[in-house]
Image (cartoon, rainbow, N blue to C red; front, side, top):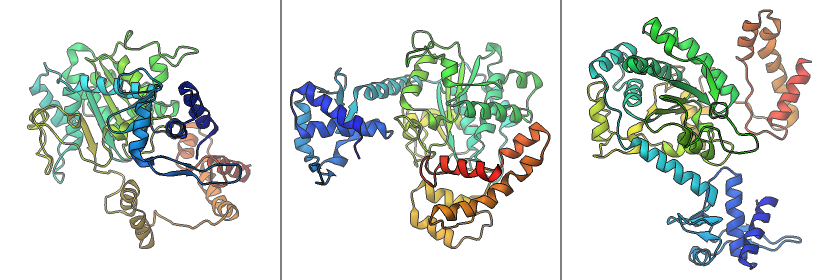
Length: 455
């Protein structure tokens, strides 16, 4: 379970303390391990009393102490501080142990978000807004609530806005229309808009999607020309400093931006998002777009999922709802609070335009997101959707035999095309997704198989 770097860090903290206390070693090693696995902190309650290592050859058993004992030892350890202390480790009031840097990033991010949601943007021509909303986001008769319109209203009035939704829920279409809406209602300002994403591939997809979507938006050609198409990676937008983890644009040298849209925000880790938010002026609009149920970033911090509170629907405060009251119907079941809260800035798109909620794919995706394994296999067993095929693979040879024909069939059209644009479009229509990178069922092995089949 623990890696060499975890052991090294545990021994380092013990050396700072001038002791060999195994409980302090385990706390330090486990918080290092948590960071390596993408978690920003260690929940001591979850590990208290747990056996980390059974006794084995050349290895002593290792077991975490009871929580009260552990907390008392950590409180008496000079390497461990409370929130606000400058120590290698930070223990908060909810029995969570942090590496200082991640506690610091989390605190700075939290402060930045709270500052942005404290008040709304004023001076909006509401008549112009209403006319633009009706044209760009027309209501759909069978829908009780037009959540795309709700997202648009929030993007107009909020300095911090999160738009989440699964594949096919219209996130990119919504963003393209929101940019057109903002351009119309803020026409006099000639907004400086930045589009960005965490990776080059995601930025290229965003550029392509905005370019293809804005053609069909119901607005003037002038407005369309003002909606940007070029997206940057976050690192390119903020401008990296060689040999440093910092950026040229930071809290002291902010972006000259009025609107910043971050696509695929679930892939952005805690450190990068903190630096991004500090580099965006507080008076600007910051819009995060992504799927809260998607796999989190590789580095520590599942920020988008935590902001959206995973499966919970957002609630509207009275203040936010009053801004929406003339635009959308009351979302049945949502509760109202009297003060600005983070959920006022969040909209989770739910209607899927690629497949219906009752389809096999829709049912399976909900079961996966909820972690309902029994439901998943029940759907597979009773599946009548031709688009879903379940095939048990017992070993690598079976996998290779199963995939070879699919690989040839999937790339056959691509290999026969002479037009580069058509070939690239065809190439993107066939994909093999792997759950892991290494091993016989991993990305490396499947890429090798594909190369040998197509050679």
